[in-house]
Image 1 (tube, rainbow, N blue to C red):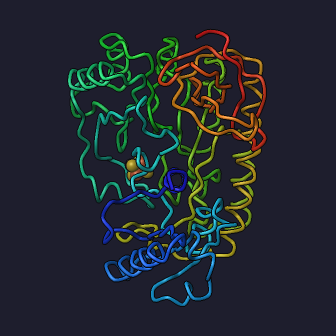
Image 2: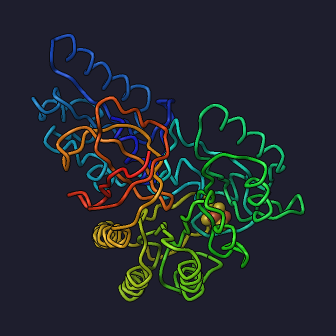
Length: 416
Ligand code: SF4
């Protein structure tokens, strides 16, 4: 269930503790005893009664033993057998047409590539956005831009560091707008934080590409500022970007990426792409796909377009049909996997510092391993040695291979 939570967030969904607010509920059923069956059925019925609008997905042993009866139960939209549990998020996102476009394009709950943990904390530095991208509800929901004073942010980071946090991720709805209301800039914020805190790692979550000032790249000369940026592209077609009211054309995006890569070694760029924006024709789609491929990204967050009431895009004609949307998402997903593998390949042979975030089972090693992230945010697994406690430690690792699933690096610790 932890994995599903993470994957749902990676698909742009948010978790809620409030049943009535959910767009979808997953019940992981059990059949080990009659009591377990009774409780599983009770959970399904409670979910349906308290939120009949939500899609109800039932999985686990009870549902797998008798999928037909489960499917006929009141309110159940989909049964996922145990054999498909590993693909639950992928299947339900595809089949149930969940609202899967980021509601708040740059907030950590959405940009959950950077998951929160005991080692990493999000520090919100601003709220609101002055732009009006036609698909985005933020301007309506969050209003004017407001920034936190630098001293406040520094205090929070120092406190987190004293509690054992090793990495702070600066976030905001539109972080590039930081400081407009205070007469300071994001660059000044980061420069000051690097001076006034000693947290080993500082990152920014996501930033709109047109917001990056020229001197921004020099911040990465400080090894405590991590060489990874999530730059939302949304589309690689200029005509779609115009309909989205984005401020960065694809050539400008390409120039930014090129200057970052020239200036900063092993710089990792990840992005968001919306598939099936209204009117996205074959030619625009192929243009977009080609641009994404040429640019190369370490990770793609793919969102199927879903209209948000109150936005301009919700009123736009020529909606893309569901099958085309599915097919394009799949094509982009395959490209994303290939590009991720290429990024990992480019990093092989390097040695770098890895923040160890915990242990997990690893099919490549056939045993437990330590896992963590490189500065440029690539996941790395290193062999576990009994008696070692590397949790929340930063160790130097030689990156030696790619895991079988093609999404993780395998390494060897060369310095603890
Ligand atoms: S820049 Fe556009 S996508 Fe980002 S928060 Fe503002 S309106 Fe939304």
